[in-house]
Amino acid sequence: MNRIRGFTLAELMVTMAVVAIVLTIGVPAFQATVRNNRIVAHTNDFLSSLNLARNEAIKRGAGRVVLCPGTAAGCSGTAWGDGWIVFVDANNNGWDGESPLRVHEKLTGNNTLTGNTPVSQYISFAPDGTARITNSNAFQAGTLTFGLCNSQNQKNTIVINSVGRASVVRVACSG
Image 1 (cartoon, helix red, strand yellow):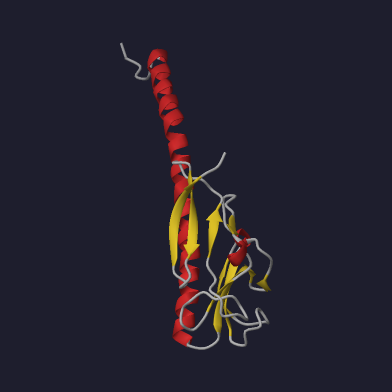
Image 2: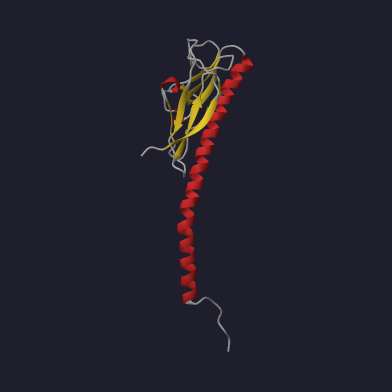
């Protein structure tokens, strides 16, 4: 008599129950990991552009290097999350068809980035590496805050101090 090999209905049901439990626990944890990685990547992308602008201003030693929300077509408004550009503003007149040093695309995954009043429209670095308000000698310090909250219910805020250095601070998500 030949034996037919295979799974019994009871073995199949137990296997399906184990798979369902693993997926129920694993999928939310994986989604949180993806969201946390997206937050870190966006923060690092912005810091990289900010450091590029500051370093280029120091390296060139003349004019200003500006970081502003916009596309390769130029600066536009205050929506940092829609993308940003870094360009050399040699004549201190803002975007006037300059060649961008870097263009960053829109943030992915419904993330946003907003700046408070001093840095809502641009961040301008003088040749000494300090952030300065355009057409002024006043320091430009401010904060930019990402919208996505990580698995610890915190979001990243980039703080630009009076000498143009940036740091990341985690703040609690409201709500």
